[in-house]
Amino acid sequence: MNPPVAGDTCPPQRYTHSTVQLFRFSAVSWNSHRIHYDAGFAASEGFPGAVVQSTLHGETLTRYALAWAGPDSRLETVSWRNRTTAVAGEPLTWTGTVQAVEGARVSLEVAVLKADGTPCVTGTVHIALV
Image 1 (tube, rainbow, N blue to C red):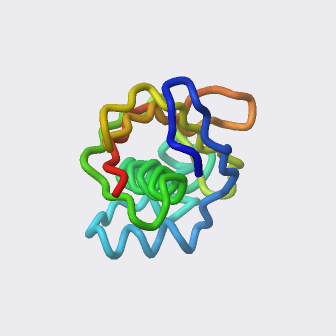
Image 2: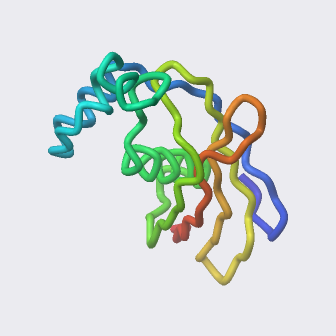
Image 3: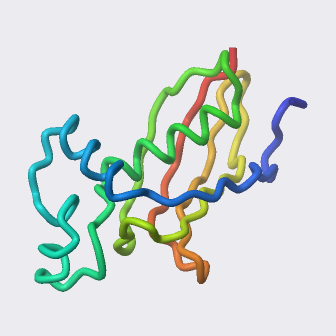
């Protein structure tokens, strides 16, 4: 990879979360709220399916940013804001744009977009390139 410069875009990553993944993430994160693993219960609460956990969005923002930066990169900080709900099976796309480069430190503006382009999650990831 060439050294990043402000304005560079990261290749988008398309993915979906499965109900099994949501169940397992709930288990390892001690999140027992049924909307995250029981689609029927989520529907009774007004959601179209099992709801993706906000912390799973944060993990996804981080994982794809680190994959883009390479195996020797190191996470410094991540912050995000949930804009709208995503559910199991829904097509999502991770995007990233380099906002600033200061020495080995790279700031990425990141987002998770729904199929229609609506931002589901927006945030910033700061990475140190080693």
